[in-house]
Image 1: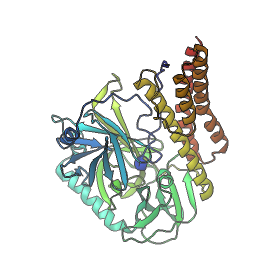
Image 2: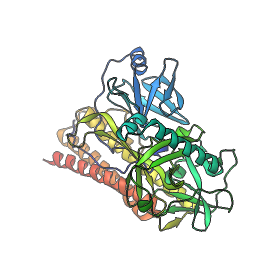
Image 3: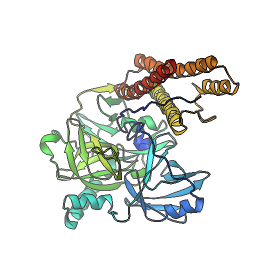
Image 4: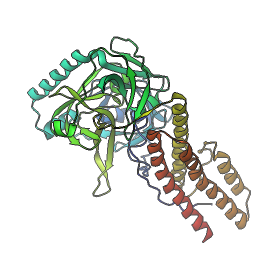
Length: 464
């Protein structure tokens, strides 16, 4: 039996959750993946990888024959071929890309299941992202050096208020800021949610013990109360009035979880009601970093996520080079904070993690059908929610069923999968209370609704 596969697409908001530590949900949610080239040997993979440069996480990287790589942001790491996959280590994260490599873009994932793309930089168009930003805005060498020096002075002044976030499942950044009448440790919600055993430490290794936690309503910002004292970072009020597009900024944080503070220079390229967009090429590990307005020495936002557009919005064709946009949430416009109870926070985080996993597995079912022209690959689908149903369906078709039995087996499987798209979402809508997770749930529901519609189309095709 072969199913007619409907097109399933859905829009997702990019990395509030682990994107940077995970970083995403997905930069572009659930688009069909291009087929990869076949017949690429291990030696051919090594030759391809170590020739030229590649982009990953919005950073250009050069891979060496000895299993190491260096990046345009100054970080280093390792890579290896394991079985039929390329594994790349970024700090505490390991990204896995199935072989063969496609120079135009090979899809992979982190341990947490977050989608990543590795693409080769074309030889005839090979400026770094720093250079592209510099050329586009005519930044002179002197201006860039001045910005770097301003950022360095800022780090020297406020070094005691810059924070590393580390744990076994990832890394991020944070900072101590003066807000209202007190001091607060500030980072992203997705950083805290992505690192259950998170430790917060200053540059000198001292542990930061946070007090009462809260989450900003409508934004991906998390804070914990701290004692008075020290030199907390000042927050700019009225960013839309006191900062301007073209102003120099620096993002200060734990780039790629390497355990050092980077000063990533750029400019403001956009200001919105609750976001600022910058061209400073921050990367995973910088989630939760302060975005510093260098002219005033104040924080204008919290580095949160980037969007990678791999397709030309006018033609729909895959672009030669992805367009990357980076955003931070503004602190000056937060008007409501939601107190956090740790027990319920982790319950809801785990509930959302299960929902996201099922969404990805259901989508993989569609990909399997599409790749195999309507057939299902035995052993591919391991999610316990529907694995036994798919195994039973495959077994039923091996037993030479009558046409009526075959149709009934098909309808039962697809009906079950359609129900699976909807049931956990409906339960979560009654149980999720934190605004951050409610917004994540809304994104998941949008994807699930598209899939449920696809399954409904398949049922209709069976009935015709």
